Length: 213
Image (cartoon, rainbow, N blue to C red; front, side, top):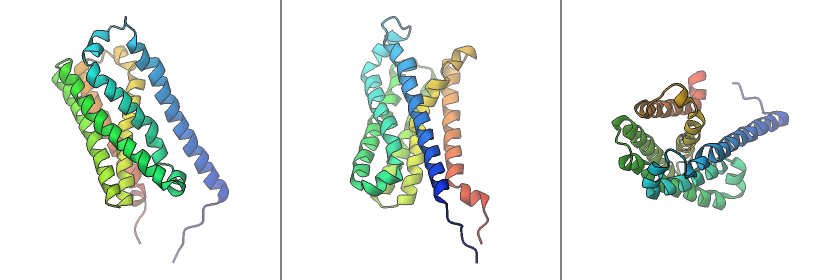
């Protein structure tokens, strides 16, 4: 009978540094999107300002609560916080879930008020619905004490949360490749399917890569 070799202290420190560096990169991406892409849209001379003003009652809650979800999500994955501050972990988790319960429906409303392109509207509805459902399932599995499943659904939820940042990072490419609003809606659906597929492969990598005795 074989046993797994213990993980050395240096390996644990290396893993911690890599994890910390990864979260820092994600934070920098989120802040860059905020200050370089999103805030300039508030300029009165921005070409899309009339549209943003028209959908402001759904757009502003979507941005505010989506931002709370983006910033609060990474703390939920900290094993140290879960271990040492379980009450804080639960409270912050409720903020995360509650923010998405507001941000996702508000995001779905935006294309219904604005341009009536069916593919763009479908893309936004699919994205918002997946975001809402994965987060709701993450909450229900936590409430029912299925912790392993809760962690897996939280990964899926946060991938869809952070996908808004990735989309913004890629946004300078759309004019270069002449991506229309119809094509953008289709791209958004394809990207979210790929995000969830990669997440599930990662979550089940041990079962995929090793044979059961």
